[in-house]
Amino acid sequence: MLSLAEKISYLEEYLDRDIESYADTFKGDILNYLGNFEIENPNFKFLSNLSSKAEIQAWVSKLSSRIILKHDEEFEQLSDFIFDYIENG
Image (tube, rainbow, N blue to C red):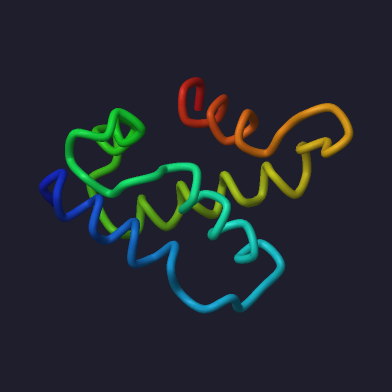
């Protein structure tokens, strides 16, 4: 099992990778939303439910997919959409 510091570090590394698909274009938005990658950042409380690098990747993929399918730019800020996903899964 990864420590919280390892999870945060891996998440930052994973979000900062090259864009390979349309879904990857949202990684930068997620990276910016999360802010500083310090243990004290309350945005990372969701990581307590994830225990591996594969689960972190799946979490990012699921959020990216939801952005593609459900985010309505006309009515909602992307940061609000990401916040809602982090808070409510």
